[in-house]
Amino acid sequence: MAAEARQGDIRVPPRVLEGVANLVREAGEGLESVVYYEHPLTGNGLLLVLPDHAGSFPDLLARIFQAAPRLPLHCLRPRELFQLALPGYAAPALSVDDQPHLAHCVKFRSAVLHGRDCRAEVPLPARPDIFLRDQLRGCRKFFRTHVIKLLYEREYRKVVTEVVHEARRSMSIALQAADGWRVDLAEVPDRYAARFGTARGVEGWRRLVTLAEGLETTPEADLETAAYEACWLFEGFLKGIASEALESPPP
Amino acid sequence: MSPTVEDYWRVVEAIASRMEGALGDDLRSLILTGSLSRNRAVPGRSDLDAIAVFRRGALDDREAYQRHVRALVDAFRFVASSGLPPGHPFHFSYEEELADQDCLYTANSQAFPDSSRIVAGEDVRPQIVAGIGAAAVARCVLFAMRQRFLFPLAAVLNAGELSAMEQGVLFERLVHMAKGLPIFACLALGLPSGENVGPRELRAALPEVDFGVLDEIAAIRRGEMALGGAEEVRGLLRRSLELSEAVNDRILAQGVEPWRDLLS
Image 1 (spheres, rainbow over the protein chains, first blue to last red):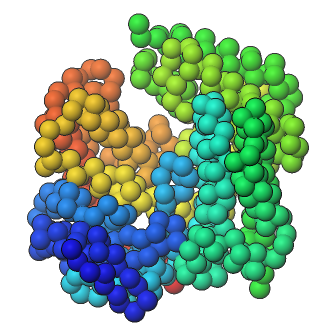
Image 2 (cartoon, rainbow over the protein chains, first blue to last red):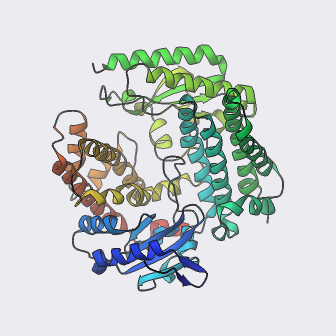
């Protein structure tokens, strides 16, 4: 088994090293570079830089996705590296959009595991607010619908836990302009409170956490009420975060 | 027995009536979107897509908000028990949010009279506007779609057996890709991108690209062609990946310039 590897502050887990070694065996000539990065929203991921002319692109992708470790993968040619700094499309609960923080994580919270170091070629986002605006719209469009399905299925505990998780992710994205890429999800609420004070979003978060912490002792008969309450608190939280981070952000 | 288009409309009318009865003036509008509103529903396969719009300010009213959510849960329960494919629950917005919508389906198709229908309440579609930054996100969504949804499917190209269920799941993914790719590509190229006009605009803009695989996927979904076996589904996937590459190459021929404002 491969030992854990360190590059600066980055610890690359053994299973990732083994997976990347396998990947390089299977697709070596088709890989200019492999960069491992840590990411607040997904934990970690791999940037695979592919050559501009790789023969059959579908076959190269097939080799990569069969051999790669189970992590978020970004497969890009050198001329496409700018895409790491662009917004993705937030569809909370349907899929994880890791474009928020991505360029910073690839540049500054990463280790090159194979090939050349391409990180200097990655630009940074110019408009971090766009990522949060997209997240808030995504919550309204997709997360609301997802929660209605959970309520229909009487998955009341799940509603509360997923609402809390999405609130945490939203705070992380709100911190994008304030070095949020450095902050893991567990520490996000404190960092958010420190940056944005104790206004509406923070208060909404505290009420959500109180609700979630009480789930263990909530009688079954009251779970439905708790789930509907969590939904309403989440709506207020989203309005708060929009107001604090977008409409009147601290200097 | 597969439902008919008339069955779809009966369910829509019943839901509209139930929601109006339960919510009164709180329901400002119920907008039917998707294939049924465009007279292109595939009975037994298409689901119901709609957006409920609630009155301004009700989001701050706990009781009103929870009443709205309960009405939507009830509507979804009604669809699920009707024999139609349940799909997903209806989307919902409050009037004050209509001017902050995303650019993909909402601002580009739901607001178009030929892509949606009002089935209850008033016509609020003129108020539906893309929000700040939504157009920028729309310019980039093709890239995200390729990375997140299309590329990972390549894992099955050279894999072993594909069960009938896996073939079905893969085909459904390709259906989503076939619907989304023309719209997302139009947005990246700055072309009109409504669900009715996007595919036509893209083909006109890129006449040298072979879009035949999209037609095949659509024909199979409508039941006009057979899906075939695992190799046929893999063939559709391979051609979808090649099409996505061809379109991506044309888009990147513009260089980084169209996205320069988003990069530092």
